[in-house]
Image 1 (cartoon, rainbow, N blue to C red):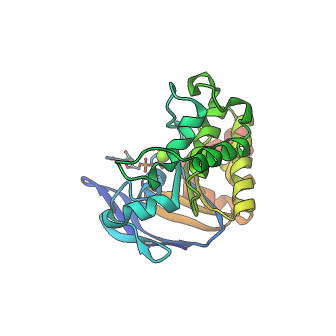
Image 2: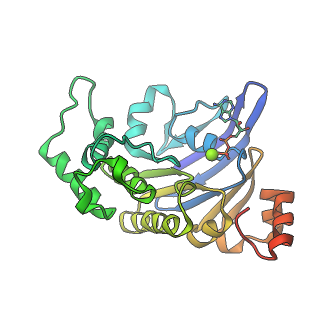
Image 3: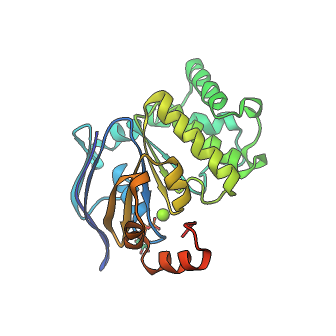
Length: 252
Ligand SMILES: Nc1ncnc2c1ncn2[C@@H]1O[C@H](COP(=O)(O)OP(=O)(O)O)[C@@H](O)[C@H]1O
Ligand SMILES: [Mg+2]
């Protein structure tokens, strides 16, 4: 469903992605794991066309991700942000309706009754039914991320990209958000690629992990098969220091 072929990205002289290739199948829940600066966000942004690769390509159902196809890509691919990207002075409902904009022309931004109903359904799925008309700036971080997820659901995406969706949240709430994403993946068969830097979450929630370090793939396999050696390759010395200090595998 998603093919990443020899993807390279330079920012100036800085080579941030180095010849990355892998495929993602329909319905997978894939975790991209790596330290801060490894290239996870850049990789995810190449998949929905927010960043243009220097060379190589991304294909979604055989359609190349580029400027010309961007409208079609954006309908299929939803994006969830670490910082939620919600609009504080708008209600939950209006924030979620923004997810329908990919389906609008610039001259028609009116929302139909059906779209309103879709938004209400999405809000119910993420557990905010009693907050439909609440201003988003009155919500907690976890609730804001639920709004971000509902906004993606009304897009009816085939793919959800989540860029460290729980990094701004405490661990209990973070877990709830990842559980919600897992439910969406299982119930709707939506393909999910989720960037994380926390190993514990990756092991709990990932079926498959792609481990990235300095813009290269260091591990690509089943989450539960990941070994200390692979983690050393992904995290470098930080992994060792951390393991020695804590004598267990924790967030690196
Ligand atoms: N727009 C940009 N311009 C210049 N450098 C960037 C830009 N985005 C990311 N980088 C650099 O690319 C590297 C990888 O960043 P990023 O993809 O955000 O990693 P991660 O998400 O794993 O923390 C970092 O060195 C970062 O400074
Ligand atoms: Mg990032």
